[in-house]
Image (cartoon, rainbow, N blue to C red; front, side, top):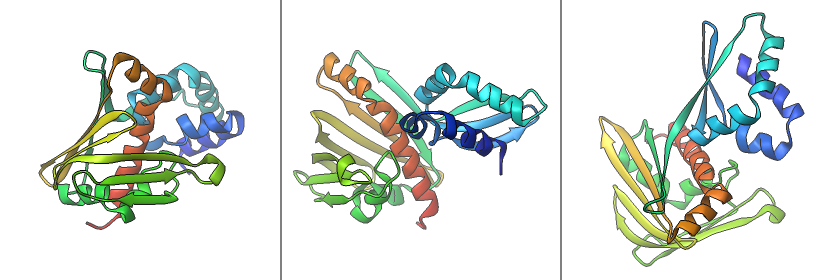
Amino acid sequence: MNLWKQVLDRLEQNVERSDYESWLAPTRFLAHQGDTIEVSVPSQRFVSEIRQNYAQQIRNILDELSTDHLNLHLVADTEVVVDRKTHAIALTRTLAAPRKQVFEAWTRPEHVRCWWDPAGYPLAECEIDLRVGGAFRFVGGHSPSSAHEFAGVYLEITPPKQLVFEAMGAIGSVFLEERDGRTHLTVKIECRSAAHLEQYLKMGVDAGTAKTLDNLVSYVDATPG
């Protein structure tokens, strides 16, 4: 068992369940080099949240588990940029898979249902009519009481490089660029106003989307191309 797993086990016992699932469970151990433990998190927002709210608890646990004075280095997997001038959120990520495989993961129900829910549960319902003007509908949640729906309409489809859709009053775009067998992914969410953007940020759409992309990376890594 790596040291970070031991830290997480301690935190799980002492942190509110919802907070643990939201901010700590999505972290992943990367390496233990010298006096530094490297841990990946879905986005820069996770770095800020963990440093602000859990740094002292983690410091105390590390001191209990090791006689060395260990440092924690958090690495954001997904770059998140909020542009308030254009009311947009942009997220970028690189996947170790060809573009065609990643595009199929975004557009085939048997794939989408496995990674879309930020909490990591399979979708209860996943319907995709992949054509311009076609609708999609995803229902997540691990129980009927926690079910939530995400639905919209496709505006542009250019396999295997681009999807544009409307959902929740915003325009979402997925751009895929292949580089040396890897896929550079950009997800852009364009809100209709400054107030709409702030509402999205308050809802945690940026952090939730980053966790969803983390799920996508894990799924693609585990799925043969």
